[in-house]
Image (cartoon, rainbow, N blue to C red):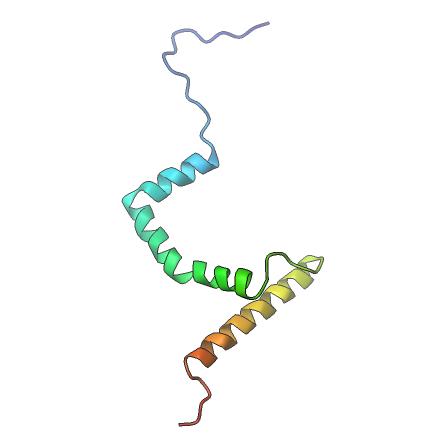
Length: 90
C-alpha cells in the first residue's frame, strides 16, 4: 500500500546535525562562544597534533588510550610552565 500526504504545502526535511550546529554557530551567542574556543582550546589541539605528532593513538584499549592522552597533556602543561618561567631561580 502506498502512503500519500494530502494538503501539506511543504514537508519538513529532517535536520542533520551539521545543519543544526551551523545554525547554532551562526547565532550571535554561538559566534561569541566559538571565538572563545578558538583562543583557548584549539591551540592546544593544534600543538598536540602538529608539534607533538598526536594524529592518532598508538595504543589499544580505553585505559591505555587515556594514559597516552594524559601523558601528552602532561607534556603540554610542563612546556607551558617552562615557557612562563616556572621553576627558574630569581
